[in-house]
Amino acid sequence: MKLQMVDVVGQYRHIKREVDDAIRSVLDSGMFIQGKEVGEFECEVAGYLGVKSAVACASGTDALQIAMMALGIGPGDEVITTPFTFVATAETIGILGAKPVYVDIDPRTFNIDPALIEAAITPRTRAIIPVHLYGQPADMDPLLAVARSRSVPVIEDAAQAMGASCNGRKVCSLGTVGCISFFPSKNLGCFGDGGMVVTNDAALAESMRVIAAHGSRVRYYHEVLGLNSRLDTLQAAILRVKLPHLEEYNCARRKAASRYNELLTGLPVTVPFVAPGADHIFHQYTLRVPKRDGLAAFLREKGIPHGIYYPVPLHLQKAFAMSGGKKGDFPVTERATEEVISLPIHTELTDEHLKFITGSVREFYA
Ligand SMILES: *Cc1c(COP(=O)(O)O)cnc(C)c1O
Image 1 (cartoon, rainbow, N blue to C red):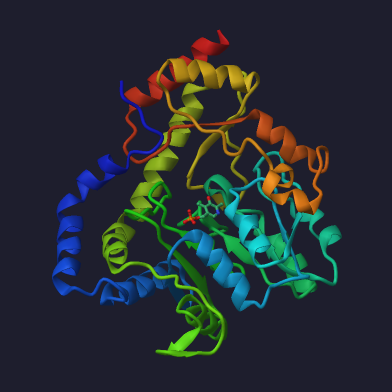
Image 2 (spheres, rainbow, N blue to C red):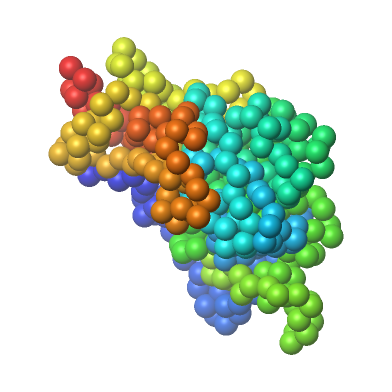
């Protein structure tokens, strides 16, 4: 049985004709940069999320950087985030000369623990970046309450959570800015790199649009230092075909997750916890397990792909050595890095796949 962590080709096959037509029409137009599909896709995403403005950019990483640049974050500033995330969340803070200030996670959701945020706020805190890890919304209500009471903007890293919602409201529409990634393996993936920032603040949207376009509003007149960060017209055209399928894609992932839960019953593994009010879209299906590295080796032998997201917490990464993080600083995160393992999850999984994968997990613990 051939298994993949994500099956991007299988998903493409179902919409091949529409995608191929969309690509061909861009090729015929010759408008590879800032073609009409980019603006159309921005409007469609804004409508889908229920936000006023959306600005496309080159990646989820750029989305985070553009959001922070527009908020004026730079040297000497502090940005609060989680140490249990993909490097881009904190890398962009560091690249701007600001300092990531980590707050430990909730052991059940793996998301930033809002109860610990207040104590991490200082007069230098310029933003809080919750990450909706694995597709589950962070606990936003208490987080937003702290942020509001201290007048700190909130940047949602929704790279893994496009379409997820929190008490009926889509993530990305909850904080000051939402950042999305269209990396191929994300829930709404394009065929290369792509990203977007969204907000209800018109002035901030305008500022992000200028920053993404070399700091320029009028060609060759540059108001601020910016980036070359654009979504290709080709990617926008592909994403326009895929966006109407996003709900169905997320639903397929949710179904696979609940089938996994059933099939793993009785094993010494902890299946994903879904917080009340959270609509988890299962970018990853992540277990907490005993003998994690043994299970990983066993699955590898069986040809079952799996992922460890993430094996090293950010405060212990070499790239952040200057921040002086040490073992023991964030015990809940450190324990998670030793116990998590993610099983394949995507829109093309069959019951046979799921039975084979969970059968092998069962075999390991027998
Ligand atoms: C994927 C990801 C990013 C970065 O997105 P890219 O489009 O790959 O640059 C940022 N944050 C998190 C949590 C991610 O998973």
